[in-house]
Image (cartoon, rainbow, N blue to C red; front, side, top):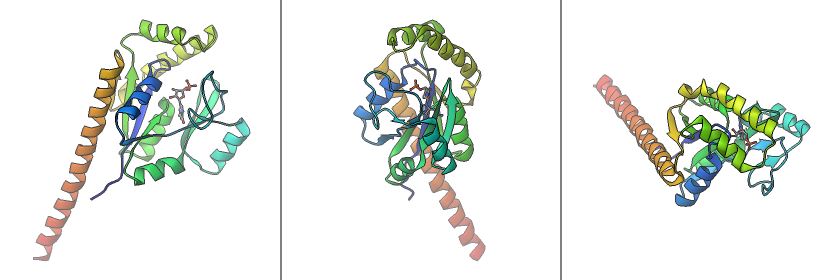
Amino acid sequence: MNNKGILVVVSGFSGAGKGTLMKELLSRYDNYALSISVTTRTPRPGEQEGVHYFYRTEEEFDQMVEQNAFIEYARYVKHSYGTPKTYVEQQLSAGKDVILEIELQGALQVKKSRPETLLLFVTPPSAQELRRRLVDRGSEEEDEINRRMARAVEESREMSSYDYIVVNDEVSSCVDDMHKIIQSYHTATGNQMELIKKMQKELKDMEEK
Ligand code: 5GP
């Protein structure tokens, strides 16, 4: 029996509320591990090194790229972001379902190199609501908000590359939806593994008769 956890990518427009959803998902269930990314952007007020991100210089980031230390990495707006390999591998081996909260280009890289990855995309119910949430967050200047909205336009074209789209209208029910999707994916992939093993054994036994 394969007890490895599954890799889950959660993407969504900046301002879709992914951070809040992840916090709630992790506090409710103990089978998840959240990967902490490396970024070259500066911390927002209240963010901490090693909790929200590992904050590194562009040079340090490039060095990690050279050392092949990332599962994926991408530029987003004006900064680089990457998922360190080691933690993800450790947690998957320990049977945890590992969540990568990353943007589109990274998500597609992961799906290409690990096709068994589950891709979820979180969206607010409307574009108007998305803009409202970005403004309410109050941590970005107007032109940064506009850049993020422009990026959302691009990202919306690729929403269909994801396995599931989750609407974040109300945090609690959205977390329920995500948990159900992830757990049923577990069962589905687990069942497939069992079925593959069963068929392989039966065919081999038949051949030997
Ligand atoms: P923020 O600056 O708002 O924290 O993040 C900007 C975007 O970068 C978000 O869409 C976030 O999901 C994404 N992001 C965070 N970490 C990573 C990462 O390691 N890789 C990639 N590809 N995107 C990331």
